[in-house]
Length: 319
Image 1 (cartoon, rainbow, N blue to C red):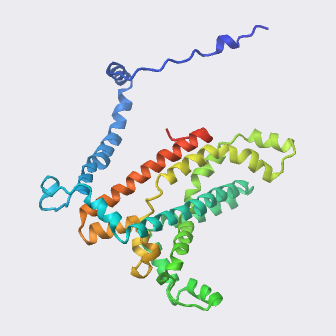
Image 2: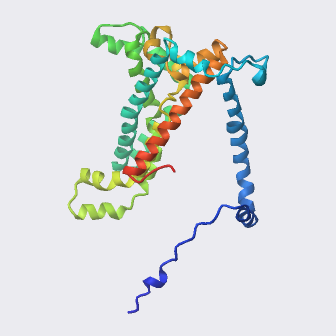
Image 3: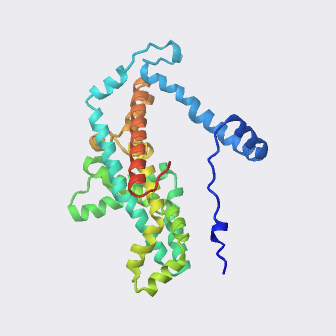
């Protein structure tokens, strides 16, 4: 029998040079696609790149009536003021601790929830659980904050349960020690189901013959999860982890602003809420922009580090 494999092997493609001539040829060939992508490009230019000019405020004592070019230039003074303040270490520490709790608790529990859903044999039961778990995500954060405030008040349901165990019926949101627990648990309730969607989608793409082969080889259910399921979604897990690490200092400010109060600043005040107070409540725009810029730079560095680490050890990465 004639071996036709060599004839079927495709010749290696030569990388195309990124020149204006090639771009022009590509545009003539695929102009409908270019037209379709124009609104998305315009959106990013108008709402993401042009506003970057506002970063100039980080180096100014910005006054709205003087504008960007009339406000006095102060160099790195806003950054020096932040790192020299008594609150800088507190907000950085709180942000890192809260973010690590989210990565260490919420991230693996989301994957575990998707794995458990995948193991359910009854489709009706699985869809019911999925629907119930997705619903909290669509509730407004303001409503969620109201529920948490009511349940954690001195006469709230959660306070009653905690009081029955500890004997303390004080408002749970008034204690700095309870803040992180309330934040993480409420995050799990609201986002666990919805965040698991991407893992459920990744699980559905695993070749079922791999499970059949593992079963024939004598693998039990746990071994099939360990040897087939997890390797099948490891790329998705790594990409989601890289994105999460890249947002490490961007803990959501909405819930924090809605729930915290001066009594719990010691553990609840984070970079985002600090920027909100300085920028919108105290009108110190240059200072708040400097803190926000510091936040973004650290996130960018963490994203590059996480992507490099992932590509080196798992061969998965964003770029």
